[in-house]
Image (cartoon, rainbow, N blue to C red; front, side, top):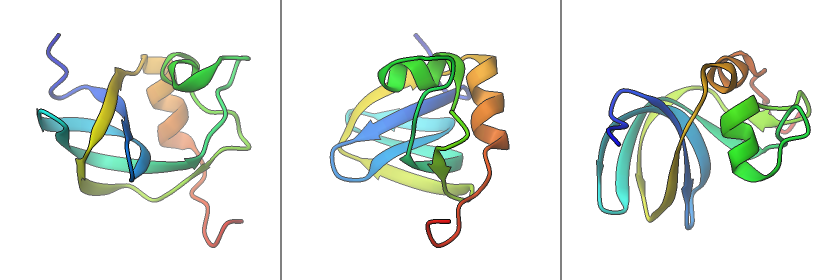
Length: 99
């Protein structure tokens, strides 16, 4: 499956969970553009796990960071997002100072 250019969720060993447009990947390394760190996430629509976020998007109580370009290492999984999930993640309110 070619995921380059698609909106994905990436779970990393030490860097947490990020969502964005996959620009590159090789082995356990990837680069995301318009990447948002999902530092507290809950799937909407009673979804479960990160698969639920990739399918249905984020519950409003989730906490995300501002979009950046990021090189991630020690990737554990890359999950393709639905259009519904991508829209939900993109419109999630940026949380500043944990608020």
